[in-house]
Image 1 (cartoon, one colour):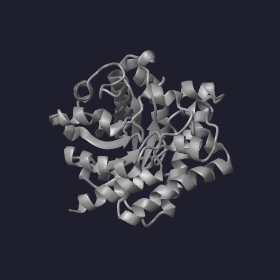
Image 2: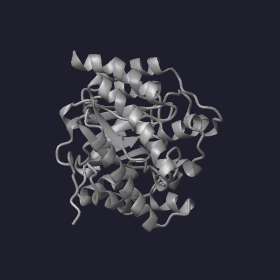
Image 3: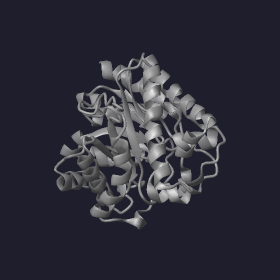
Image 4: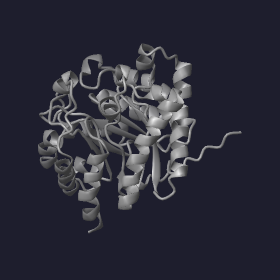
Length: 320
């Protein structure tokens, strides 16, 4: 009989304002820094080889060491953003393959947690991405369709040591609602991160605050918290500054290093790593705006240097 150690599933430390660092732009780091080819921008196939797992372990350990240096907790986000049925099919993986890989990814993170005793709390998240292209709401589903689609991957996670599920780079409220409903039925805490364009609105034009309010209204506030990811702070700061009650619902930020639009990033041949120190200062400003911001990490173009800058700028402020 397998017993799963769901350490924080019923008491997420980030909800108690415990600061957790997390990782950065996994896929852009692997492609541009490590020189790997990632078809469909998918990192999960690395789980299938010893070399791939060692590459991932090295990446996570580099970020965990920053948390150790700064005395913070850490959120281990699984490399499973593309490990759902439609994307897996493009890469030749059956649902059975994907079930095995998703479960193995959480086991891999559980082993990393066990080997990193100096950092606590260390929370494990099953990461899910959009069914379609996160930048284009052209595959817009109803909430019911989204729930049915994402329930499969969430169900695989529910059989593991996972503490929560985090859906990132979502571009429509309907998909966010579907993910939350599926996670709630599976008994898992869930976080939804919306992405915004350079005007601070979701790709379908919805205002950021409106997206959070509508998602909460349609799910009885079932999400543990919300996040913003895959946009530069310049793109959403104005929306935050104009915000009100919904600001309390934002518990995490994973921003891009680059100020480029999604369309420009899609076409980019070279990495725009921005300025790590400047991004760190941007996060310190975001912490002043967002009373419950507890999870700090990066997205496209960021690497461990950006997370280190965030920690340098925010941990001192956090202790004050």
